[in-house]
Length: 162
Image 1 (tube, rainbow, N blue to C red):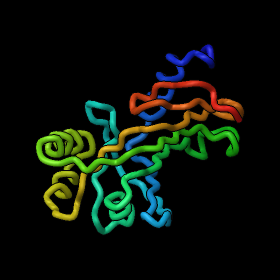
Image 2 (image 1 turned 135 degrees about the vertical axis):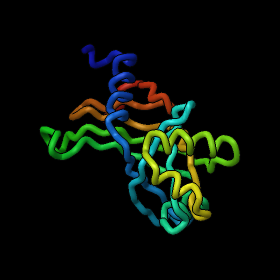
Image 3 (image 1 turned 45 degrees about the vertical axis):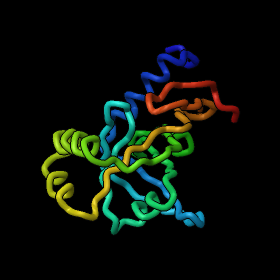
Image 4 (image 1 turned 120 degrees about the vertical axis):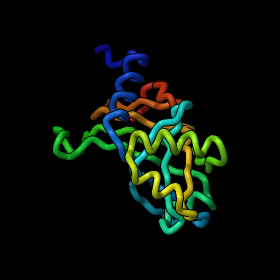
């Protein structure tokens, strides 16, 4: 593979993301106090990352006050050759709470992919469905191999300066 080919790198980043069913979600309060958690996700028709979160979780309350988040997909420690060069996809996103028809359609897709638990959770009043639109990000394959991500479709931009 030509490591500088943006089309092939985009495909590789998308295949890497497709290996996951959960995402690491980092949020912050409006004062900047950080919090990190994980959540199962699906991609919607716009390739936004969609998660169903309870108000009991700190990251949900954070997103309702400050709709910015960082999402991370990390190669497992067992799979990587060098922990300092772990493959990862880091996405800086804007969050939007989905409502009405868009919410129901996305929850139907989520239940189909993630199972019956979604049916129970969607009936509870404290669960909110968020869609994350990628504003920027990075796809890191190892030492000296970090590319800018431009959007939710994981379009690769230029090599990031190290």
